Length: 262
Image (cartoon, rainbow, N blue to C red; front, side, top):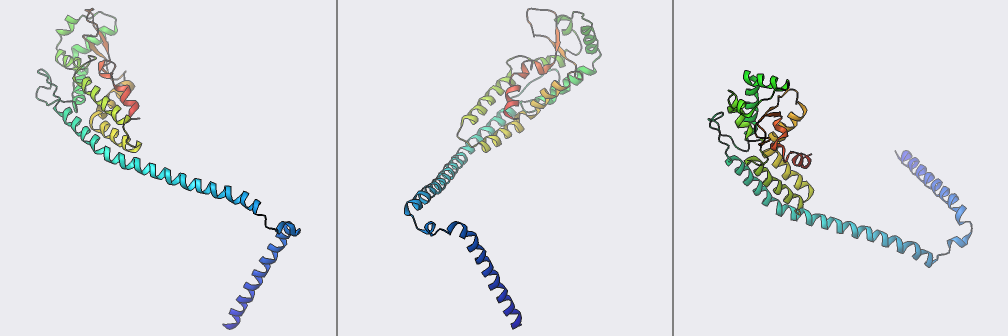
């Protein structure tokens, strides 16, 4: 055991000596002239002073950045509850925004959070209606269909329900106008970007997801979903044109919302 310890000590001493010898040889190339070993305070200051100044600047800058970042986070956390309450208020308002239909869906409670469901139901009802399919075929044959003719058809109840959403200004669009103002206020607030994204995600998920999905689906599947008669697209004309409901007044804020939530 003692021999092994002695052997390890000898090996360690030998390695240390070898390393020191190699260091001495390599540094000798530079320090062969002893003049290079003379201490020059001016050179020392020229090297050390800027180096220490740079390091101090980096440390100070980093500390200042972290302090500013921390202050922004604290301010954002203080502001965020206000906007969370605002969003809850808008959700309650949307649920209380009733859309009354005395013909179709009369037994349903339709509001600004679920109206897309009933728009889809009425569109599907038109697709199954024989008179609507006849009128749609005649329209495709370039036959003129008047507003009076459409008003006499048996699918008029579903069509009138859908027509309510085609105007540039209706109760849903007015509500979305206010929602847009809330989003703009959030964008311009002192909230940090992470909190802005979370708040807008809640707005999208709670109030706009079905609306955005509906418009997007009609955009991509215009062949599958037939256009509807646009009764009041032009009040000066008695003949009726057909068009996608997603391209009427209902679309007014779609592009804005889509851009905000991408």
